[in-house]
Length: 282
Image (tube, rainbow, N blue to C red; front, top):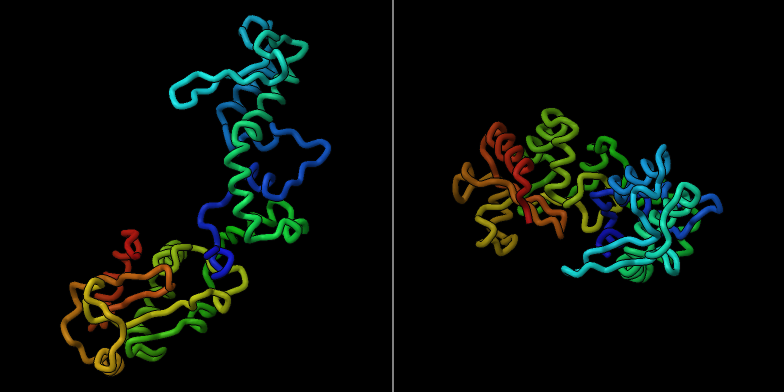
């Protein structure tokens, strides 16, 4: 629900076969072999070997069945009725290849796929997806691997605790992120604050809650939020204590960066870079 309601993207792209399941689109020429590599590369390689095997396939001792280890017990699944007694031959191996691919791609994961789709369809009506192809749905869910529009991010950032757009520490932060971080570090910065390294498809105006930066004075376990005193001190750069040892932290549920009121730009750069590479945050 957070992805749907807050404009976030799925960090890890979905496999092609799963996108096909979500869309429910199978052309008349579709075969489970088409998407099998995205689920089980080893099985795809073995079936391809069987398809082009030059010898007598019966020598391999295969039948139209497959064994599965279910909680320590070996369970035999027949691909067709009586399949455990039907040998795979040179004449019927193509049928076996497609049946095995279908079993792995559809039958074996049917319960898990159905459970996911039931939850997914409670949030996204299936009819809404009919206009999309699998690549388009992938982009809708996971976005593009493009650089972040920093100007758009800055325009839609909110500040708390005495920070404001022209505050010295805020200006340093943007200079570091925009000019001294490379594209990968900018993605890590965004992931550190929002839990996702990709920007919203429709821009940061659609990120909910908005991207925010708050001046902090104390450790997270002592943080009780903004007070009149902390806001005044943050605004006028009056430090209750020296923040040199403090690292930036984040609350990803609120898309909030909690930034100490550093006295030097070099300290901010060092601490921020350390934090985004350490996968810290909350």
